[in-house]
Image (cartoon, rainbow, N blue to C red; front, side):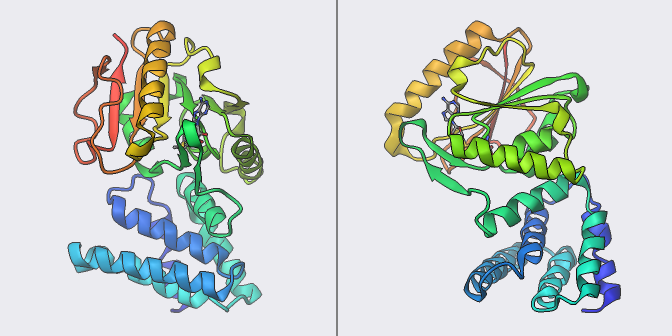
Length: 297
Ligand SMILES: C[S@@+](CC[C@H](N)C(=O)[O-])C[C@H]1O[C@@H](n2cnc3c(N)ncnc32)[C@H](O)[C@@H]1O
């Protein structure tokens, strides 16, 4: 890997409308590893590197060779930056990151935070389900399909976790609320918002984070409600059904006509979280089992 090849990575970082979900996800993971490569133990590095290689093998099985070029280049970049922390290379890395758009940067920041365990990846939360973060690439893509005037929408993330969706929403929506029950996640989100705001990577003025239960916040002022569904296994079926009923009733009572509800459903099972609401179709043809979209009529 030489300087020219590294510079050639820059256009990849500028890609704002990712078309290939799998490749972009791979690149984000790889950049996250580059970012923390000198902050983790050799064992952790090896595990992360092997994960990427495994992911690459899966991609290589299904993609055309030319689509894989960015992945191969970035694997070589990881090798290059590993143990190569001269001021020149650190400066080069900073230059590459400066070129990266805010959407990519925020994603990389969160993934890097997870690798070094500064940010949470998963918490089992007993009766309130589990914390896990959203498949962030699709979120913005779908929001753009759902509204032609996003800047004037008001959005709330019910159960905002450590804040990745609210950070991303702030790039395109000026009124963003996150409400989260688990205090440590609220703290993580507030710290991260402060850091990313100082780096001018998010619009923190747009974001409000509240610590508390989403059952206690009035939903009438929100034109879009986002939920990353906290249940992905059948063991908590009773709690899941209870949350479905309680939330549906609350939304029905408080939300205005025309409010959009976007739900991401983790896991393999197809679920219709709010069958009582009108579905919006034709948004997520390719990942239809993972997302549900509704409109209050
Ligand atoms: C699957 S996580 C999603 C986190 C975040 N929205 C994201 O997409 O990255 C669901 C979150 O909902 C939170 N949660 C569950 N019940 C809640 C409630 N009643 N009020 C507020 N937050 C709740 C959990 O603590 C968890 O952090």
